[in-house]
Image (cartoon, rainbow, N blue to C red; front, side, top):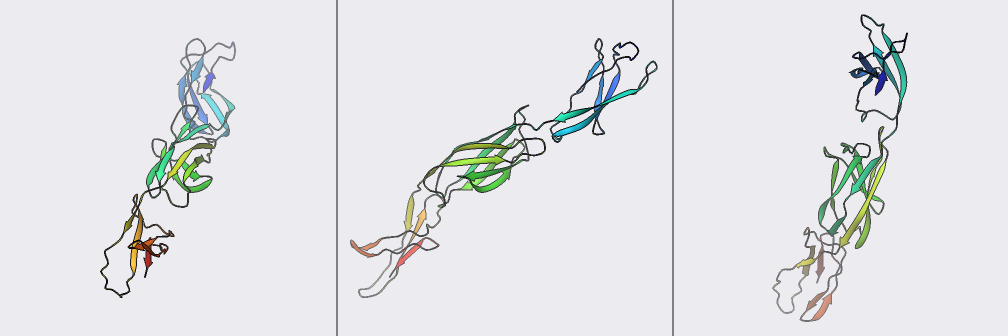
Length: 238
């Protein structure tokens, strides 16, 4: 903020005089006029101010030779643009990873803290997490079967606030098949005896049972059943 103090009678610039700056009635600080131009400069932090018009007042309290004076004007603030970035990620089904995004104000490069970011896969929201003290949001995500194998669009969105514009960042999410393993116990049986044979199909990443998959049971090379795994990943044939 810049103000100039001159003597009214002849326009002579007054130096070393304290000028008080207030914004919407709140004191922002005091700056002294400098020799030669009579101007005083005060830097303020506008990051917490809302966009729009604000009333700026500059006051001089007077001294032994000069009367008090003040001037008011309108300070117009516009919303700041942001840079929103998100890192690409590659996941196997059942694998967990932090999806990391950063939010930065363009005008001064400041990282924006405590701002909610919404994460999406192919346009579908998977959750919201605010930025931390470094302007970073690390959203914990576990890849589920709801997402198909292959490449997908990973998006992070910021809705904006009173002082900043909305922003969007995109990256690639690559979903890969995971290895599987069966859990199967030895079953003793006598000739003519009926036994239930069970196997549990699990992912190697998180050891979770895989639901709704057909399992082929064979005995001495002969197919004896193709049951589907249940909610626990278990398939049973009698």
